[in-house]
Length: 268
Ligand SMILES: Nc1nc2c(ncn2[C@@H]2O[C@H](COP(=O)(O)OP(=O)(O)O)[C@@H](O)[C@H]2O)c(=O)[nH]1
Ligand SMILES: [Mg+2]
Image (cartoon, rainbow, N blue to C red; front, side):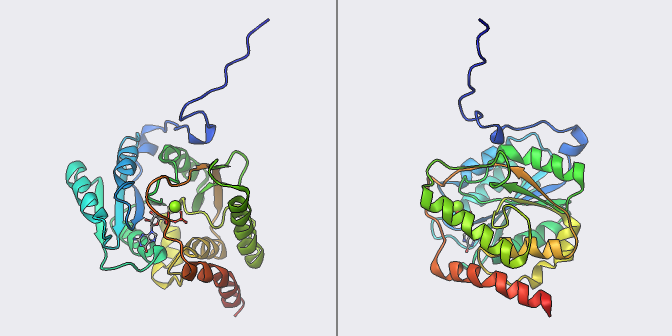
């Protein structure tokens, strides 16, 4: 009897985490990864290594640090010296103003510095660096204004560490925002998003309302309203194993209110 192919195992067992090779001219696309950090000293070095190891010579990392007390900003500076300013940059901000504000500042700077694509990525290991080439390939092949690393399309998976309660809450948050805003984007709350530079210019980052996590929803809604196409590429979302989540009640309340605010504004 022919033997069955053995089940793949190891870090790349999940098809959603396998890296793909792009043609050389695609791989050279000027792409800036914008990574907000607040107390991510234990996570940042691993993220930098994973991104710098990708076969993407046009990739640059911009760390946006809000003066983390744990010294994340200085660690980022060290990486900038190690890899050179053309590969790793650091935007130091005076204080903690929220994820949305950090992203808006970093993404605006990336566009001003000449990026053709800008990727949002958390520093805590939740978003797989190995997926970046595939997301860029999909973005270039389809011309989508934004390409999402999506937990909620076929093939997308969640960390085993997430219990039923957290899975349900995340699903519910997605359905909540999507229903109020009338969109069919599957992962509207997700934070692993690749933007075409002209879509970001059209969105006008300086006028974005969200200070916190609702930034993710507001940005996608703005892109849809302006007629940009959205693609979703399945990813595996891992739970952070080092450091603490910065989610708090204030940002949760903002996330509950923001879809209503966006809807009301779009009707005026
Ligand atoms: N610069 C900056 N980064 C932040 C802020 N809040 C969160 N982050 C970063 O944003 C990313 C996502 O935050 P995280 O706490 O992991 O959110 P969670 O995964 O939803 O719990 C991480 O890289 C954080 O360090 C902030 O106020 N300023
Ligand atoms: Mg996280």
